[in-house]
Length: 120
Image 1 (cartoon, one colour):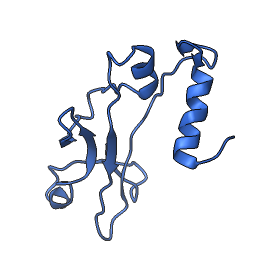
Image 2: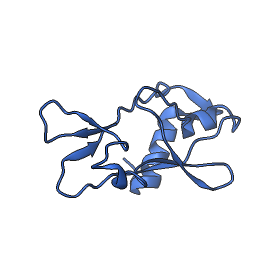
Image 3: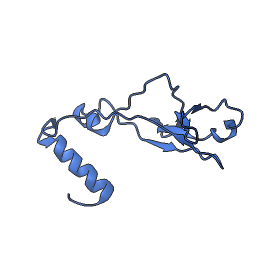
C-alpha cells in the first residue's frame, strides 16, 4: 500500500493515479520462483499474502520451501509517497524442535551469524 504522507489523512496512492503511474512500474514485492526467475508480485491492498519461511522449510524437511524475496521501493520526486506494509511474523517457540537436536533458538542463532557475522 502506498500512502501520501504529505496529507494528514494519508490518502492511498495507486499505480492508476495519473500523476504517479509512471513511478510504479518496478516498485513492490519480488519473489524468486523455483526456476530462479525473479517475479514482480502484485498483491491488491484488499488481499492477504502468506510467505513460507526458512524455519518451516527445516521443520517440514524441505517439503515446503522458503520464498526468497526482496522489495523495491518507489521514488516519486518532490513527493512524500511511501510504501507501507504490515508484516506479521509467525514462528515457533524458541524451544520448538525443528529437526533432531536443532531447536528454533539454534536456527535463530545461525541466521544471526549468517546475516550479521556474530555469535550473539
